[in-house]
Image (cartoon, rainbow, N blue to C red; front, side, top):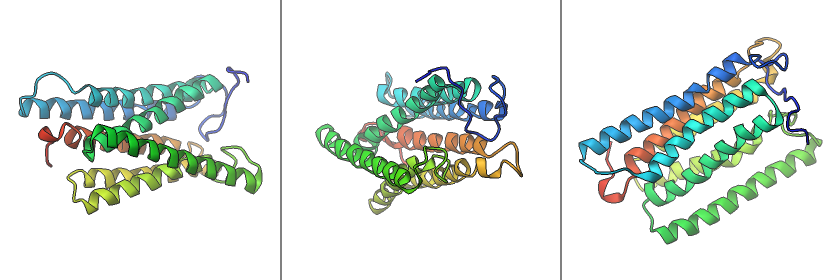
Amino acid sequence: MNAFASVDIYCERTDPGYWSEPINALTNLSFILAAIWAFQVYRTLRAQTNQQGHDVLILIATVMAGIIGIGSYLFHTHAQVWSSLADVIPIWSFVAFYLFLAIYRIVGTSLVRAFLIYGVSLAMIAGLIALVSNLTLATDGASAGRDGFNGSLQYLPGILALFGFALVMAIRKHPARGWIFAAAVTFTLSIFFRTIDMAVCSSFPLGTHFLWHLLNGLFIGLLLQALVRQGQPRKSAISV
């Protein structure tokens, strides 16, 4: 594999140049803004409740959200194999870390039970991703990006997991249920715009991938708000 091979899978890109995707690149600021929003609320709420020190787990999740924007920016400017990894790795790292925090902190289970549920959840998500990938390849032998969904089927397990989590929160009447449901709806809409990007090229040369970035930034922001507001230790979780 040539790590410096060019990658051209988005409507906006017309050549291998650094600024061939200016809108796709700059809209990654949405992830940085999501992280800033989360940190500002985190700092305000801790000051209001006179909490000392910092919640390291929440801060790590916030920083990871910002890194998603940096990685995606690198991909939409350099557009090479190595930068595609810089794009994908932070995203899935955040998902894996947030999933654990959602179980441990937002739901409020014990640490041992959180790890058990987390392990089962990861296995189920990985299995669904593998199933979707196999079905896609079996259907037309296409690689991601030429499967009729522009590679977006890989996110289907995430959508199912999010709506499942939102349902559990609603049944429990958990204070974070509104944030999680809003995040699930936003993520679904963002995947729609990611999927149709190449399909609209002829009529809309800019494409719609930038809307995936903007909505995903909002999606990450909503998840972080649920974590910051309801993911602190149970005795200090703040109702909204």
